Structures are given as C-alpha cells and as structure tokens.
Image (cartoon, rainbow, N blue to C red; front, side, top):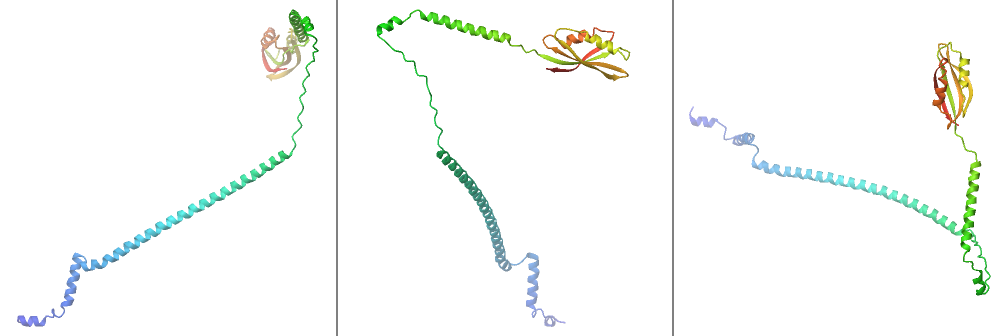
Length: 256
C-alpha cells in the first residue's frame, strides 16, 4: 500500500478535536490545572475565605453579646442588693427617729437641789473687841487635843481587834495504817494510834478495810490545826509502834 493510500485510510484529521481534548487532559494530569482553571477557582477560594471570616466575626460578636448579657445580669443583682440595703437603712432611720421623738416628749426628771450647810454667822462687834479675843497661843492646844483624840481612837481599834477571835486554819486527814500481817491485833493497833496526843490534834472515826489475803488496814480520821500539827509528825509518831505498824499513808487531805 502506498503512502497516499495509508493517509486516505486514517481518520485522525477528522477526530482532531477529540485528540486535542485527550492531549490537554493528559498534560493537565501531569502538570496540574491550567492557568484558566486557576483563574476560575481563585474567586471561589476567596469567597470561601470571606465566608469563614464572616463566620468568625459572627461568633466573636455572639461571644461579646453573651458577655454583655452576663454583665447586665450581675449589675441587676447588685442593684437589687443595694435596694435592699437602702430599705434596711431607711427602716433603721425611722426607728431611730421615733425613739428620739419619744425621748424628746418624755419630761426630764426634776433636779434634786443641792443643799449646802449655811456658814455660821459670826456677830462682829467693834474692832477693839475682835483684837482682844485673838489667842496667839491657842493653836498648840488644839493640835495636842487632836493628837490625843487620834491616839484614843487607835487604842480603841487595837483593843477591838484583839478581842476579835482569830480564824484557825484546820484540815481533815484520813490515814491508812497498815499492819505487818493478818495475825496483828488490830484493836491493839488502833489503841496505840489513839495514844498519840498533841495540841491541835483530834481523833475521829475509824474502820477496818480489807486489803487482801486476810489482811486488813486501819483507816482512821483526824482533825488537825495546820499551824500546830502536820502529816509528817503524825506519820513519825504512829510508826514508832514498830510491833504493830508497818507503814502509814495519807489517803485524803481536805481543808476545813
């Protein structure tokens, strides 16, 4: 087949537009969209950015409006609180005004007149008589008389104080007297304890208290004068009975 016959059989020139479109799509896939398409898509992207900006502006305006509403609500609450405080102060002022008005209406108590002793009237005679009555040496006698009266009063007070009975401090003491064993004669032990006699000591009631293993201790009460008898002296005197007494303890000590 010759070259002319080959060209005659090819239909490429009749489908040139379709082949051009395919070639264009091929190069667009390799190199990206053409400048004409970029120009077409640019306004669309700008429009999208504008819409996003408008959306952000609207959201910021909504946040500002919300904040403004919250601040207005807080101001309204503060305003209501201030109104309540003002009402309370107004009520207190009304009460105070009513009390002041009541006090103003109440008559004041009558003042008690202060009475002063009227000075003794001295009848004055002539100047010559006044000069004759002046005693230039009478002041010493008055001082001696005042000193004597003062000393008499001091002596009377001292005598009265000496007759007044002096308060004696006393104490109530409860003693625990322990024997050696269960074979100790407790009656004899109590008798020995009561033989301790001294000025300011008075023995009271006593009883036997079980300790354990058949042993009993003597619990005896006494009243002593604090200035004359002490617990140390009592313990020392009672423990002298070595055949009966093992030890002496103070169970209770009370001031009377």
